Length: 225
Ligand code: 6GU
Image 1 (cartoon, rainbow, N blue to C red):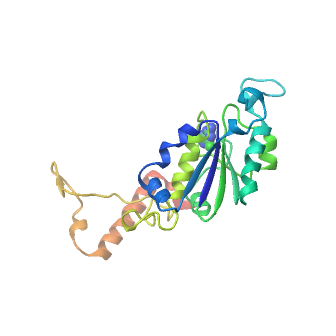
Image 2: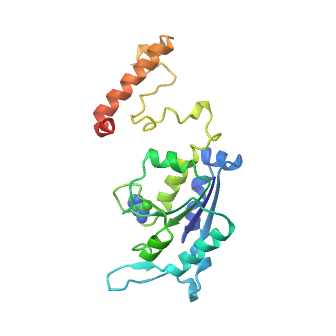
Image 3: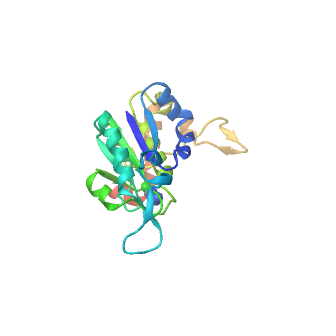
């Protein structure tokens, strides 16, 4: 999978994909992430990419021309499955969004700043909008990093048995069960006996019960869906 990210802050997107599982995905050639500085595509002087909004009001808006030129530059090279705009007024990002995006080949992600982007770009170029939650970030970059991480780890070959996504919280509509590692007795706090019983079926049943209990207690809404 290839992801092209259009941003005014490419520096912000260097570190998130340079470690751990995202690094492995890139090293294995399973995930390619390229950042593009929007200022490289503006025809305006002083690398201007934003301007005052028509009708008045506080806050700048990202101009359509630099965004259109950046998108069209990328589209000349390959066909994109989705052009995604990161915006707090988009549909909420969920595990099922990540699952479906992980099956695409080429994605563009546009990171907004200030008051957002000129609406004509949303109308004529953007095919999908994503918000990562009901709060406002100062730009779309951190949200884009969340999406790339959630999607990248699902690509076939990225995770191994130890890190398998099959039993993640949300993957089956439930939260994950509690987990424990050595020592079995830490400061007198013991792990549940059943985990030492050696019967995989019993352990599976216990984990399922724990998942259900956690989900009922913490996120009852998930069980209705
Ligand atoms: Cl995608 N962008 C911004 N700026 N803020 C957000 C968001 C995105 N999702 C939640 N808050």
